[in-house]
Length: 85
Image 1 (tube, rainbow, N blue to C red):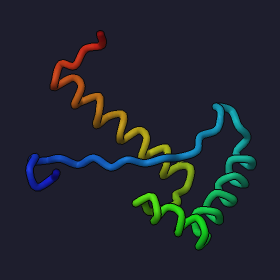
Image 2: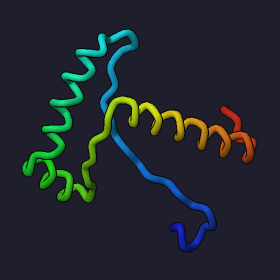
Image 3: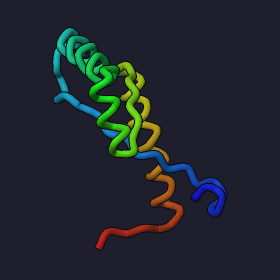
Image 4: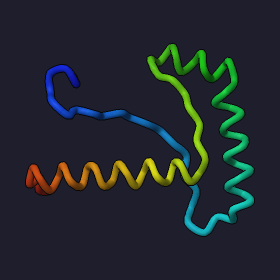
């Protein structure tokens, strides 16, 4: 697609979020467990079967990814004058 549409850069992702106010020590513990799971050969194999790849990040890196995508798509929506029906 990026060969046909100049500037096209869309990447899907999935992540796990916790409610606001979750204690940082619990976030850290959950993140460590998720990173370990994503790195497992079984999980990697399953992802490959689905045509995906796994990667892990820190909670701060994931927060940055979400903020970046919100800003990116807000700009697209504004520039294209997309309206809700």
